[in-house]
Structure formats: structure tokens, C-alpha cells
Length: 189
Image (tube, rainbow, N blue to C red; front, side):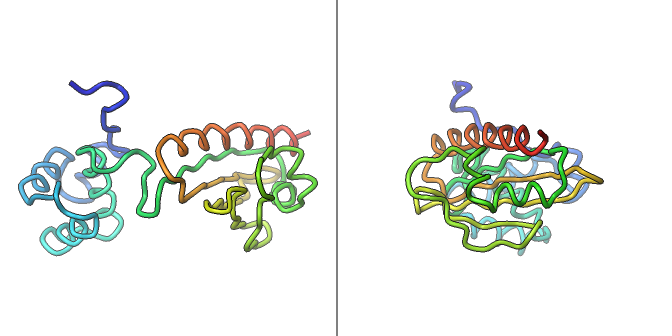
């Protein structure tokens, strides 16, 4: 019997949405993929099957494949091809330029982002849009995206990728939730 810790995550989209776009509900897709031997196929092979034999478009064949892999225990929550990936977002009552600067300026960043290890390295930044960074471990990546949400409001999304395992992903999801709460408090003051 599956426990809460081992139970596969529920599909992120309901049966109505998947049926509207693919013509089938989740249970139908799982039966089709099980019958085709998808439990022993690679991610790319399942995607190709859905494309070639069922004519599903690119975004939906990825969604069906990942949902199937998670339901069958072949992929953990937050797991991607290159490791685990999480994202956290907040909407803050501050202009996008102020929020972006709080990430870009090292002294300001130190006020809300507590890190250990090597300094965070900004690899590429497009003002008020996004920023790509190497995390303090030198191995994982962080991308911040910024979007104006009306006058004086900004949505910021922190995405941390190439995490080694589910435990690290869960830890970093909690970390980024706290960090973005601190950022929100700083830029709204």
C-alpha cells in the first residue's frame, strides 16, 4: 500500500483540461502507455510514441509523458532531465526596477538573501526582465524572472535547477520561499 511519502503526485491538470486538448482523460492515457510498454521506455521514446502514433502537440506530449512517469514512479516531483528543479514566485508592491536592483546589487542582495559558500555569480542579466546565475555551490543554476503587474507591482519568480535530488529540491523550495518573503519585506518598506 502506498504511503503519503511514496504516493505519486496528482496530475497538475484535471481530466477536463487534458481531454479538451488530447481527446482522452488521464486514465485513458495511462492505459494506452502501459499497453505500449512505456514503463520500460525512455522519456524521449514515450514522447515520440505520443507524437507519432497519437498526434499530440509538443507541449501536451511532454505533459502527458511527465504525468505518466510521475504516476508510475519513474520520475519524482520536481525531477527534470538534468536533475531536480523548483520555482517560487511572489508578487511585491514595488516597481520592477526596484525589485530587479535588489537582485543585481550585491550589497542590497545581502540584505535579503542569506547564502553560504562562494558568492552568487550573475552570468547574464537583462534589465528588469531576467537574470541567470550560478548558485553558491558552483553546480546549480538560479534564474530570476521579473514581470510588471500593473503600476507599482512586480511578480518575481526564482527558479533553481540542476538540483541533485528530491531532498535538495524540497530544501531549496523552502529556502526560496523564505528568501522571496524577505525580498518582499525589503522592497515594500
